[in-house]
Length: 186
Image 1 (cartoon, rainbow, N blue to C red):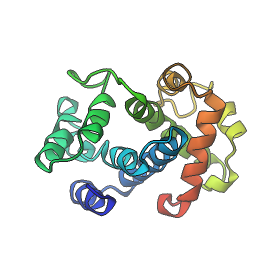
Image 2 (image 1 turned 90 degrees about the horizontal axis):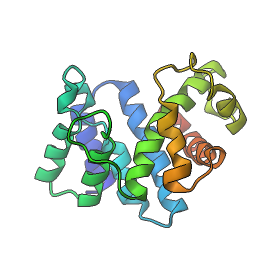
Image 3 (image 1 turned 180 degrees about the vertical axis):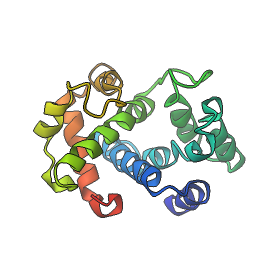
Image 4 (image 1 turned 90 degrees about the vertical axis):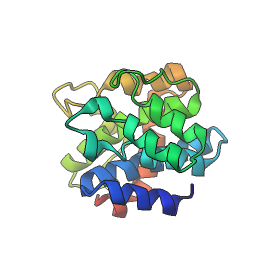
C-alpha cells in the first residue's frame, strides 16, 4: 500500500479534521523514527497514518477499535508489519492486542501519546509548533494536570524499549511534526 491509497482509506473512514491531524502527526514521527533506525520510512509511515483509521467509527465501542482497521487492511493485502504494528498499538487498551514486539511496534506505541502532548504544548505556545521546544515539552511532561489524558508512562517506554533517551525521543517527534506544521494547522 502506498501513501496515496492509505490517505484515501483514512479520509473515507475518518471525517474529523483533528483526528486526521493526529494520524498525520503519528505518520510523521514514525517516518522519522524509521530513519533513526535505518528502516523503511514508507512502511513505518503507513502504520502511523492508519493506526487510528477506525477510531471515528469505533469510539463508542472500543472493543472494535484496532480490530476494524486490521480487518480492512487484511482484505487489502497490506504488509503484515503494518498490520502487526497497528495491532500492537492497542496493547493495554484493546483486549486481544499483543504487546509490541519490535522497534516498529514499540515506536508506534510510544509516539502515539507523545504527539498529543506536543499538540497541547503548541496550543499554549501561540498555536504554533515553531514556538515549541524540547525543553518546553519536558517542562510540561511531569505536570499531570496538563494534557491529563496523555499517558506519560507509555511515552517513557521509549528509553527501555527503543534505547532512545526521552529528550532525544521528544526532539525527533517535535522536529518531524514541525516539518508538517501546515498539515497540522499549527
